[in-house]
Image (cartoon, rainbow, N blue to C red; front, side, top):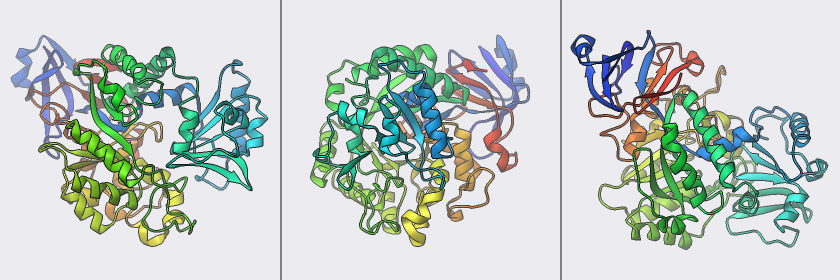
Length: 515
């Protein structure tokens, strides 16, 4: 038996509640309480050395393998100009083998005036297959070599729920939402070895950030879903990481045919459905047009009947759904269907993002058996474009968290990595302050939440989402021994210090996996 002691231990059972020590055996907490009461029961003492222990941080919505891909490819998220992007692409291209594709992930052309997309001709000059994934992953840009590889030309029709961009009748190389899958599903990266490597890199990085588990959606992007599922089954337990996998509707039927046994380390969850796009590419479905594009209200990935058919399909399997919705029109569409086709008693559906709301939709959401996966860092990354996209009036309804919480809706925090950086401290800071680090501008201050509420997004809430509130997310007897240990106290340091706190140890099921 192990006794963890010698620091501040937050239980997250209630705000401010701490204990002196944790008695743990084989990954389960036996008791939590006073050091003097527990000391005599332990064979091994683990001194926290004054550091601060929390229930293990969990990312409630990310793409674990996709994040590993970002670590493997060119990370363009911190590039500050088009010229810098082209230089990075040229340097990367010089290192490629002939059969390799040049993939850049995380470019955000809306972050500043210096950030624009290259022309397709500039990408052609690199003399290799080039794919640039915008930070939102709802828009990519490719060159003519890629377009030819996937047989897209000026006569190719837009797929349902997508756009092949053209200017004066000529392809620009920009593909939006479902159109981008014409390329993404055919990039030659679906080998088992590639996926294994991406998953291992991702888990190592997530452990270093204090993350003990995540709810992921990445079973439909790497060929047959058996390929990523095999990676998970082989790697997850060996690497001590707890994964809950959503099942994209495109992969649903195949996954139902696979013999799969859930475990402590790996389980399958709800049917994942995309309804609309994102603000960045103006593809989030809005109830009224974009302020900076008056002829455009975004797009729906599915017709209303096709969407209803997917919901009915999930219900026929007694399953819940997890729905990507950004715009208020998209939220309205799914709310109507959830009212018409509720889940079984005791089940909860997942609303992912919920980025633009209104008062009427808030009240309807509060009456549904749902949880909402929020991404506080979207507040920061959208800061420079939201005023232009939405105008002043709708800005007050962007990225609500406090409005959802005060109506009793469970909100769980995630990064949507590789869209945002998966460091939970960044998300906690963004939820508390609703501003960029070190900046003064605050987006809709009434939506700020408390430090306790922000930490709960990454501890107690993810456990509630997957019906494990009785065994995960708190420090208490009978709970799994998953801990995130930091060098300082989130609840006491100056708020501007929170993103800079250091992970001392990450503990999964009683095992130190980092630190």
